[in-house]
Length: 518
Image 1 (cartoon, rainbow, N blue to C red):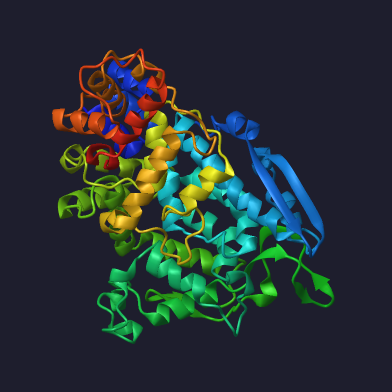
Image 2 (image 1 turned 180 degrees about the vertical axis):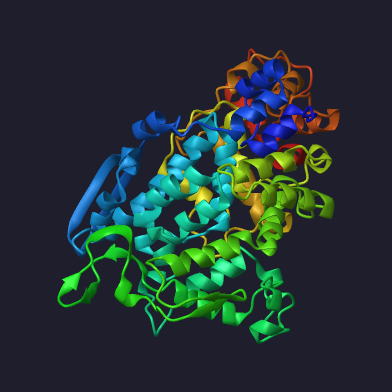
């Protein structure tokens, strides 16, 4: 079936906003061709060179240990392997060095959101980072592990198979540290990871049935091996299954031996609870092969019908609206379930959502979060990203601190959260700062063409066309002209301040509700 979707709707939903290049590509090859291309991105990072060439200024003075740094640090550090980054764990290295790795990943995320041709992968990477949230601001070791988590876990599997993604997350240093599983031992299993695995990563809170049942056999369907949901017993038993799953962090393992200091995943047999278990009404025999218990839990939760419904519901909320209809979610669940053994399961599910009538009709249903607002403005106004501490600080203060959200839930994905008066003020400040290049993070090149308009109202229309593909409503155009202290019909292109005014016009057009939503 031909994909009958307005190109701007498609690019606002499956990309970080339209760019002139992609609008031309879709006009030439069609929406189907663009979508097919995006669903199968190259394994290579097309922004690797741009990221490696970018720099962030790093300045700090540390007393313990003593160090003074004032330099431009290349983002090329992100390409280093985990064991190289893990060297910063040493107490002789200032904490600012660990924090820099999180800042560098944030900067690279902005570069890719604006410049990558694989826009759908960037959108899905943002989705999965929220779904499998880790807090790199609150925990220095998570910051150390973040470059690898972003590169080898989230981005690598963003459009792949959910079961493979699930294990990549479970064995990542970032998640092992964040949810404390690296310290889980037989006889004293830490339940943090197992709890969030059920509640946030797979079956979801709606499938938590402990308020109704406190024995596994009482859960509907359990006797037949198909429990409708999970209870605390499942969490406890799953936690036992993941004992011994840890990372090489220098911890002693007995007999004078220590784990290496690489941050890599490892399994310590002596820490594993080898006795029988029961998870989701499934019996686990004792003394299974290494990792087998944990992997079986991952198999069970990945294949559970509640997981399909919960994760597909979140995908529909991300790509369509806060309240997706039941038919849309059912179509996504069908695609998810049919492709659950395929390497591109997630891509199949996304395509099913995109080809729905609900998706086609969903323009303007979602409020852009700050990252989306920034990237869509930069793409439409042709800003070549130069990440700076000032820009990153502004985004951190906007309510969407990338890789620094404290609770494991990830940032909210409901419109109401992003529409408070304070949030709106920060959104407008972000756009004005970008237009004025307040943080030396790149100037809007599109302003040059806007500044050549003959009259102020023509300039506003040029700015509005650049951002939204159509002239501004008459009332909007007149309001912007008046707000800038200009008179309609007067000369504009001959003014000495035409260029800074044109930049402001772009910002004001981006403040309209049509641009603020997707």
